[in-house]
Length: 104
Length: 334
Image (cartoon, rainbow over all chains, first blue to last red; front, side, top):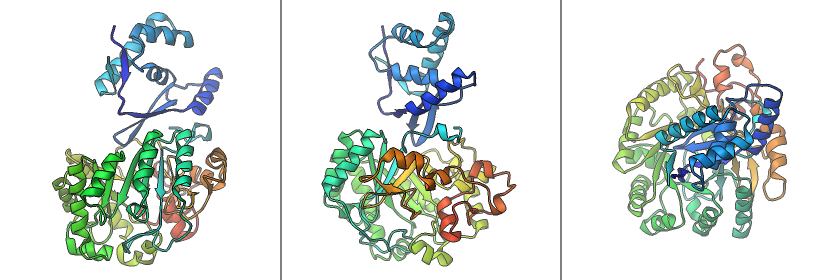
C-alpha cells in the first residue's frame, strides 16, 4: 500500500501551545475549525492547518499507509468511522493536488 | 489568524540577523550606518543558532551591515543549516565574486538577495555612494546563478525609482532572479536624515502601490513581494494575510550584532538579549512586543474602516516620526 509523505521542501511547524489552547476551547464547546495548530510556509506564504488537518499532516511521514493513518486518527478523534475515512481521503487528495504531498 | 494572545506562535518564523554593523558602503537610505557596538565571536553565534533551533525558528536572514565582511559567515551558515535552519542573506554584492558564490552555495544558503535600487547604473551608484557598485551587484547575481544559488533582488522604493520600478523587474528577469522585494522606505538612520529628499508623499505611495499591485497580478514569471502593511487599506490588495498589520514582533524579530533583540531592524527598542535572557519570557511577555501586537487606533486611524486590516501600518515608521508606536503610519494616504 502506498504511504502518504509530506513534501520535504515544505517548511512547517507544530504549534503545541496553540494546540493546547484550541483543545481547551473545543472542550468549552467553541468552534475551532478555523484555528491553526500547524503552520506551513510555502513560497513565502503562510498557511495553517486546523486540529484535524494538522494531525493528519503530522502523520504523513511516509511510515504508514492511509488505512494506518486512519487507525491512528481514530484513536484521537471521536467521530464516525465512515465520516473519518471520507474526510481523510478528501484532505489527502487536496494536499496531493496542491503538490504538498506525494505517495511512496 | 485570530490576533488573540493565546493564538500567538511559539516563536517567530524569521529572525532577521544583523551579524555586523560594519559595511563597505554608505547608502543614502541605510538604517544602520550610525550604529556601532560589540560583535559576537563565532562560538557565541553558534550558541544563538542553538537557541533558534531549539525554538524551531525556521528561517534566518543575515543582513547588516554587509554579511560578507564576517570571515566566519560560511561556517555560521553551514552550522545553522545543520541545525535545521533555512538560511538566506542580503548583500550589496560588492564582495560577491565567483569564489564567494560557490562558498555560499556550499554552505547551504537557500537564497541570496542582492540590493539594487535602480536599473540605471549611475543612479544606483549615486544612491549607494559607491562608483561601480551597480556593475558589481549585477555581476554578483550572475555569479550566484552560475553557482546554483537561488537569487532574489531587493529594491528600496524611493524618489529615484518609484516611477521606473518596471525596469527593475526587467533587470531582475534578465539576471535569473526568482523574486523581487520592493521594500518601502524606512525613516531610520540615514533614511531619516535623507527622508525629505528620498521619501514619497502618501499620495505617491498610494499611486505606486496601485500600479505595482496591478503589475503583480499581470506578471507570472517573477514573484513580486511587498512588506508594507499600509498597502492593506487598498481595495486592490487581495491577499488574505493570516497576520494583520506589521509582522514585526508577531512573525519576525531582529537580532543585533551583540545578541540584543529588537522587534525589527528599524525599531531601536531592545526587548532583551538572546544569550542572557530567557527567550520565552521575551517573546510572550515583552511589554514592547505586546504593545505592537495589540495596537489601538490613534489619530486618524480612529474610526478608519481600514484599521482592521492595516493596524495603523508600519509601526517602525510611526515610531521614528512621532515617537509613538500606535500613531498612524506617516505614509498613510487616507
